[in-house]
Length: 119
Image (tube, rainbow, N blue to C red; front, side, top):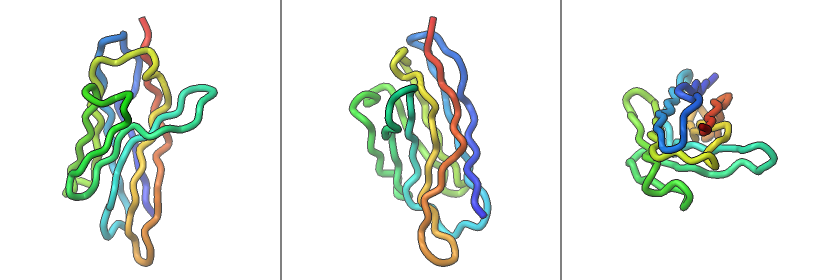
């Protein structure tokens, strides 16, 4: 079985920074795209950023220039550096990864970590 474990959420003031981390473990042959989604209260889950195994990145327009996604293929980890945080960034952030196990690729999700931006 595969697990994604997130860390790094918390409370930060507007304009501050946080770094989220996510580590994949278990029976993994290869990890394709890794990424972060978020879900604010009363809203649908939305894409924040993704990164491929060759380090190509994609960002939501709302976070471009403020957030940076990166991954370490050797450690099966993905990070999200969040700068210049705004109250509207408040949400539960979920790590996701498309992982090849014996068989076919499967999309996995972490348990979520709360990010609250408030003064």
